[in-house]
Length: 282
Image (cartoon, rainbow, N blue to C red; front, side, top):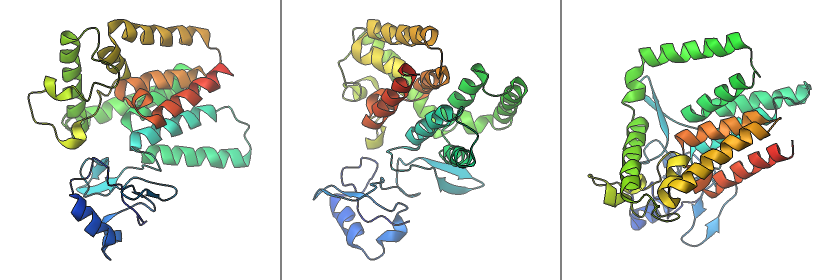
């Protein structure tokens, strides 16, 4: 699908403002993009539904390489595929106990299809772990999924260990630990990315200025050790307190180990807030 606008403030683009404008007004612009709508923020002209400008040739966009071909991961109208994976994962868990009406079944199938198209490894691990721990899927099926995952890791270990996303996550964890050693009381709210370059020994690209992909480390880095312990303790207390929809809480806890969006982006805060609200009212 074609994009009608462009987000001039998108840090993932390596084009100059002039090139962006030329690209936007070029008659060949549609072949460079995949979304239906975007944002021409330079003149505050916003389209609905407002997808990000993404493409296989855009630096910093979530992609998947299969058999030598590059595919885009599903974004929806969200800033990243992982966020869509988290949203759909919560939807799958919330819809698990719905009546077996034909309409609900179709909806569940669509949720699963969209979920897998995000190719969010953290969300996939979190979802199946939550389903297995809460016994929403049979034990044999859980063990078979675990076995397939282990075999896949053994056969394709280089894909996981040497992948760009895995290496970047290790780098952010190293930076986070170094920052924590120097600033145990925290660097201040939202200051992780502002202080990021101080704790790196290599030049960061524009799209690499992002928080550590772990909400527990991120809270500890920005607000101090006691705040990090409070977050962990709060999740632990909620696990023992909740009776229903505990699978969503487990899913959020595991997601927090692999990504930061639950506390760093408006969409993540909204997703987490709605999920915790569902649990509180269950």
